[in-house]
Length: 54
Image (cartoon, rainbow, N blue to C red; front, side, top):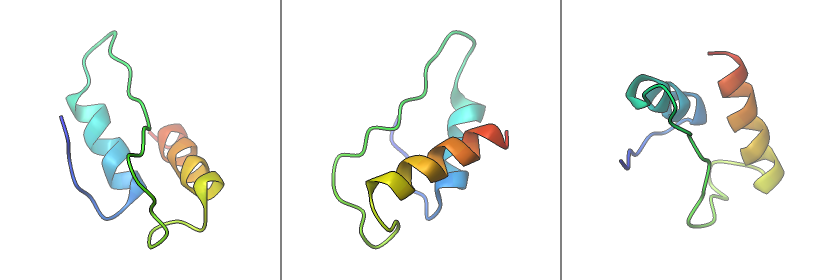
């Protein structure tokens, strides 16, 4: 499933709703995202923070 969102937190919430027991949700960017994040570390940090807030 591919979903376009404006915010990492929104993407994580959608993934949480769609995932079933036993599924894994993977952050696997296919391209640069300089317009959304400071760098790759910021992107990963935002992903982890959004998961922790579930």
